[in-house]
Image 1 (cartoon, rainbow over the protein chains, first blue to last red):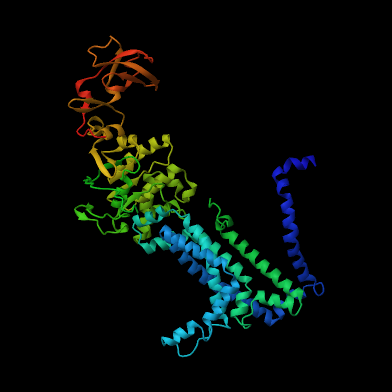
Image 2 (image 1 turned 180 degrees about the vertical axis):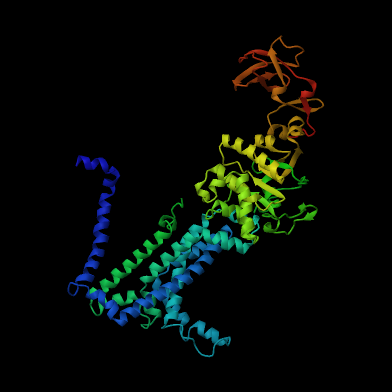
Length: 282
Length: 318
């Protein structure tokens, strides 16, 4: 005991209770899920083998990944433009924009999804408007398909994409950009050779955040997909509540967790994760 | 940027080819603003800036071909030293072989050959400063602008880098326009110094002219130290080292007598503050080797100086 005490900093004793709390309330259930995926309805790997055996499962996984990748792409590109505009706006406009960004965080995902339902419907203002100006002759199906899900998800994810980029861009030294111009680089050369590489940590952080959040999306695909676009999260809830196959649900949850961890691991091979999450770069 | 406030007003300045010109002034005097206008980062509302009698108004910064060393260096953090230095040539689509040769030359000029493949954050402040210099000189600009390039270095390193900068200026022959608030830097490096104050030029001249013949109280006080004598025909500046001091009665033909207020010992000199009836408190720097007398507070002393030691100021306002 005495020998142990010499090597453990007393600080650890102070955080120990919280450590235990996290372990019990967080790691416990996760381990329980992992266990369920291997033991329900009977011990073995049969839940996992469904991944290759079942076409439905494979299709759901593929749909989920496709939608997440497309959502991430659009959300990051649009978020990049918004963050760029915010950083370079005058102070007054900047605080306006920040307020709007925060307000969008406060509005429930349900409300935001249902407002898309009204906007995009066959008799919604978008279809009616396009028809009125003669752009289309009959209503476009914006909903009950992947397009609707993507519109809703990109819209919901943009604020999340903006925040890491905003933090990254705000820390850049504007003199570096001036230096590039002074050395003879045009505005676009400066953007692609200096600004974009310097904002890469922000792009990575923003893409990671959006992708991980998208993986677990439930409400938007359910409402805007109209039951036709089945993603993993919705399928898990069906397994839990309707068909009561907890083993399959646990397997899918474990798989998503593994996917997220794997992504973080791959990312850590290319850059220090602390820079992605806003730590010092050196 | 500054709203309706006029940061620089009524500045007229001719810069000679190849000269080392320093813009010297306290913060807020407009020296950096003037430099940014020359570089093209700030627009001027009226007036003209021209190079070889061709106007630069409306020419964007990247077309002006002026090298610039920024405050804090502004190196590209994601590029190696080599790529930083070659950047100006690379954006001009210069062939790679040519860039490599030129970058090697620049690395040699600033003696950083062995650091070519490091990133800026792996270099010391002095080394970063040299990279910034090499990067700005790599495309052989006719003019190099330097914005307080030594501000971030400690004092000992600063003196060393001053020497290197002067040496590089001699070797490349480019016109240097140098902004600083440090009077010692201005005196020791420049061919000419522009003293700036409240967005206007206070006085232009060689360091010697400015020190020996200041035109205003501001010039005399900002470049070196000075006592001021208010006589009937005008205000005079009198440098502390040009006053001779002796114990009462020991001086030949004293101009003034006074009482020592305080004495501070600095090694090569001692600074004696003398209270006089005629001119208030005067500062006297005594060369300890030529005049080894020890003065003490409360002592009565004689003060002497030659006629041309006191310089009459052309402008007597503050």
